[in-house]
Image (cartoon, rainbow, N blue to C red; front, top):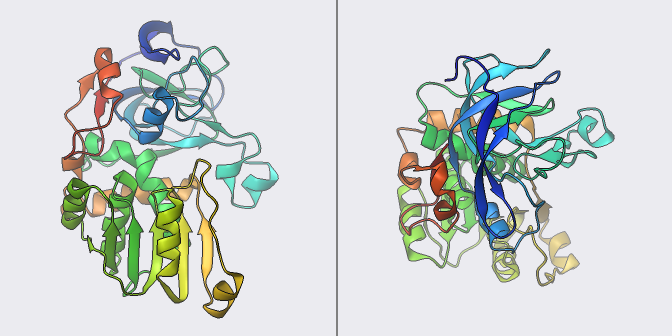
Length: 337
């Protein structure tokens, strides 16, 4: 951990045609702001979509929103302590608009997002593919216990916290028949969380390696029978339609993977009414879900092989090599700035 705040730091800047590791100034902290020394970051699929131009994003920018680090400096009134090992939320919210007051801060009217802001704007060090990141007021910060390795803690800021939000939307899971669509990082985390909650968990994914991983986290291959809950992380309209067709009376469909435009889904209103179905969506998460993510990972660290999902970290200088799909037996590539 740095003994004093640095004047400059290294940051990987996405330029639209590649990533340049630059030496950039560290700004003076304003009220409520926190400076974190990034220990380890993991590469989320959304960043892979950005660099492959499947997803629009500000450019230039410092990408990265799954990370763990140590607090090295705080502005006046900041809710963090120097020396803490922490993770932080993807969203930065105002806390006062109508959506924040109604409990939908993930959709704050003035929301900003870690790793999604322009480098030439007023928050250049917004992403975790850098040696340091600045967290503005309105960022949720969660302390990480010493028992939780960096490789396990980092994905909590996006994948695990989002899963906590989807499970909340799914309701009571003990004794329920659950179908998880997709066995990527979110899907596999959901498999474990549903298994830990006492559900019978089925998984569907076209990738055999991911299905093999799912078995290690409490999931099994799906059958053709009815289910009580289905959570989709694939974003595939075909997969969603198949999942919807398997819901039993009173069933719940939670959509989390449909974050880009796709073919419309045909829904028969009569079936929804007569079968008493619930269809809901979840995008991002609330502050409580970030804290739940840390607690869940720490509670289950001996039950599931979380650290087996992340590669050995590469240095920031090799960030371009890290911005690619992970090996078939892993779900996240790690970067150690």
